[in-house]
Image 1 (cartoon, one colour):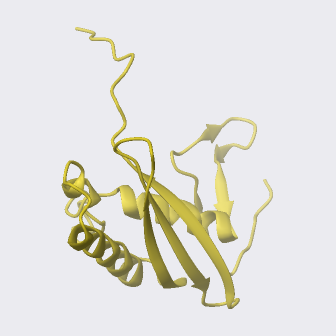
Image 2 (cartoon, rainbow, N blue to C red):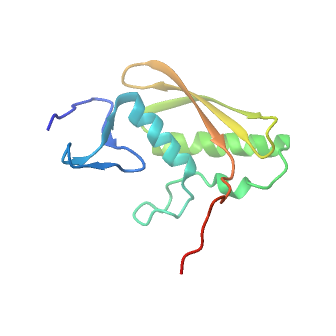
Length: 139
């Protein structure tokens, strides 16, 4: 098995993928690991992780609120603070929100700098509630 040594970090992909051919878990590294970590951070509710009860962002609480200027400012602060405290590999520079024509979808754009390489990157996190379509009930 080939080991990937990265100074930006290596971790499990999310959701975890297991393979017999690789004899283990699919690993991701570098910028991909940081982007994956940000997506997990923004999708996690505070208190959801047992061993890290303060980890998360609580964006779900804003799900059905009207998108006012004060709510936009609050969401920006939530995202910025969560990244600042729980993703030490990057420095967030700007968080912007964009309402789309599709009702209920807000694009959260995050501009950040990777601290160890001083390179600028951005990620767009689509913030919306996924519908439970094609859900079958099994008893």
